[in-house]
Image 1 (cartoon, rainbow, N blue to C red):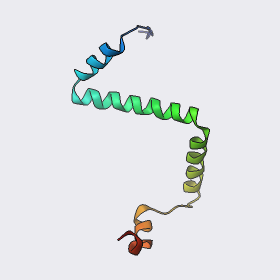
Image 2 (cartoon, one colour; image 1 turned 180 degrees about the vertical axis):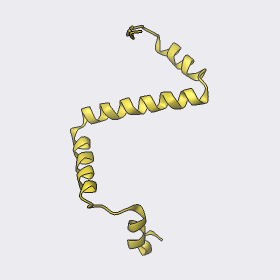
Image 3 (cartoon, rainbow, N blue to C red; image 1 turned 120 degrees about the vertical axis):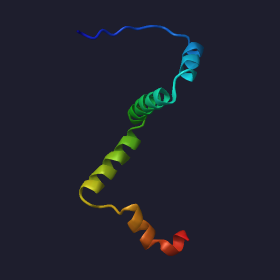
Length: 80
């Protein structure tokens, strides 16, 4: 069966009311979707963030990074 998209208009207050009635697992799923959408929009709105993420990814791929444990070991005195 083919999927069909539909567009509906729901008042924001009604949407919030519906969200409040969701169960815990449904709220977690909704939060995941919202966070994903916000991240995509943030990258679209701020190219500098995307550039920094790309640079960090490149550094990771070539091994130019330290793990958190390594950082803590190197900076033990400063962190205590």
